[in-house]
Image: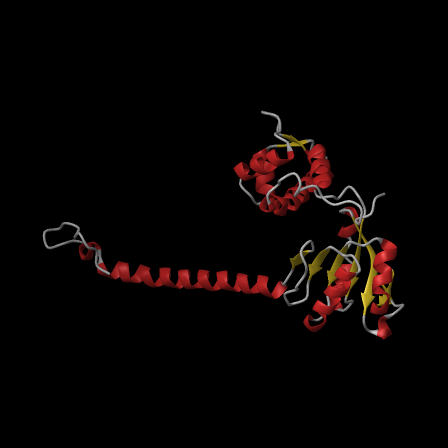
Length: 253
């Protein structure tokens, strides 16, 4: 089976928009769930609802893949799973290294979904000498002194950084220098990389802060609505009328 170093996804060369690429994993997750339930076909409306997008956007996204479904029947689930998996490069083996085996790194190592989605954790790497040799998820942790050799020996092109923020850029630089061209960054910092290297940042605190913003806004809207109801009730119908019973051109505040 091919390794990640010699094969790259074809999405960019085929002109698929980045926004569409970002939605393909959502479709694949929904389709995989349907496949596991032995559902043979699915309509664009059903699949769009399962993926959390509107059906028009889904049909547009699938048109970039050359898949248009069959009127009255829908999309073939198994074929779409294969088609999207191939487009995302998941029909081949992608060896991955995880650097930083603290609580988060260990949790990532123990995640069982990598193998079923085309990724193989080739190595776990940590700077702590006391961690060397200790098994995590059945894989012995190796010291960062071995990073370059590990990448070369395993043909790794995808690295996961789960280190503290202060160490992340140095780790990133070493990964890139050793040949890694795609990085998933869990460290709470922005990484600087050269052209040709892709970085995806996952910051759980930022996501929680965004949710807190929405919660605050919803609470404010509810409070404003509750305050408005008694005020309107106290005025009665006559409060909205002029001296002759007509509704004034400018409503009272």
